[in-house]
Image (cartoon, rainbow, N blue to C red; front, top):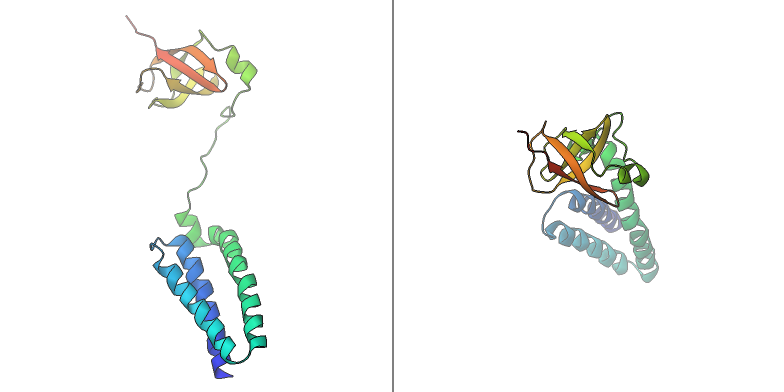
Amino acid sequence: MGWILFAIFLYLACAVLLITEVFVPSGGVISICAFACLFGGVYIFYQHGSTICIAGIVVAIIMIPSVLVIAYKVFPKTRFGKGVILSPPERKQGDAVPDIGELKKLPGATGIVLTPLRPVGMCDFSGQRVECVAESGYVEKGKKITVIGVESTQVTVRTIEES
């Protein structure tokens, strides 16, 4: 009975190592250790009979995907997970992507750069915030721009030279 408990321990170690491999870059070393634990557990089960071995393999087939799914669902909700995983950007009122019909009306419109265009950033056209692409690379915040083209949802802008 002691060897069976050791085989179960190896299965649990395999599960923990697989979860660790998902979140810690190791070049596959942790995966090799996890599968060594798995095969060690299967070998111990095999030593105690073919029925126990088949049951152990069935448990492994169910356990591995279940552990990975649970890890992906639970990890982001833990305190450590919240600290490691990036949160989505916060959107302000008016940040929604305008429909294509509204974008088609923009060519020739003038506006102001809200965030630096590197070459993509936010611009303001009469209170409507639109993500734009600069025609010539970097454009500083606060510069006046004009829309020179709209393709699908990509708005291309050019700076207006102030005299």
